[in-house]
Image 1 (cartoon, rainbow, N blue to C red):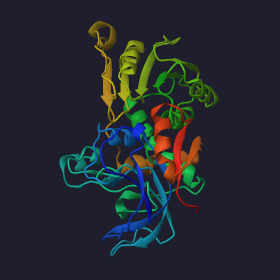
Image 2: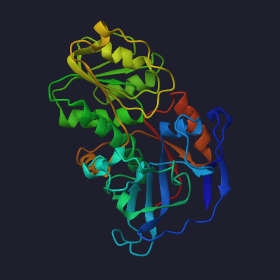
Image 3: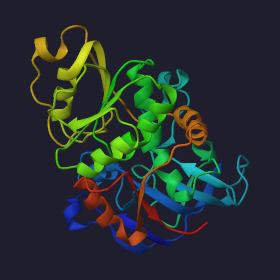
Length: 340
């Protein structure tokens, strides 16, 4: 099978992913072999490539927003049928026995494994996964549309839950890429009376235009002072400055949720009186649970979410990731790997 493989830590500018031929993986007991149709491009892949979230092994096949069809069942696997379309997300396995798992917080499991980091992912024609960590997909989404829902959509949904937003309260979104452009559609559906304020880099006019198109009530640049205080804010960016800016713009008792696995630049020094006093809160998002995906995917179909997708071929994965690094992808980048 064809796969784009990472052999070591590198700058994405070096185009480190190599197109190689690998054997088609064989599903073990309880696993399914999935023929990959599409795989989303996520900022976490940049963190893996550049060493902020180093993979557990090399070489590794990246990619954790996977849409495919079940090609073969491993022994004992019975949840899906051959030919059925499934999704695979970031969480690849959890122990099910630790205190975190027993509380439904498998995203915090110390033994958890992650797709494209601990196990080969979807930048390939085939992949394997435990059937318990695959999801049926709503039929109203094409493979390209469904792919970003499996990480950008699910993690945004978790961030929204953690924000504690109530209908009528204001929400600030810092960064307007794959996750935020899906999340704003959820907010407009679930919290129709909540004003949504979007902050981007000043030069990202296309991102700002997309935010307006999707119903943002105000759009500006990070560093701007919005027309009203934020009850809640979600930071989707890979840099530190928006954390301080969001805290500056928070209402008393407001909450900032940081939706990033790592930051490429440090969070600037905070002034306690200006940024943290008045019972302001900061909460991070760490990975996702299966329950997040199981709740979000039917909701996405009901709304329905309409992802904005920029398509790439498998062999163009490096180029897609470079554009993502530069903030030049409109909506979500997705690799088309097969038809079906």
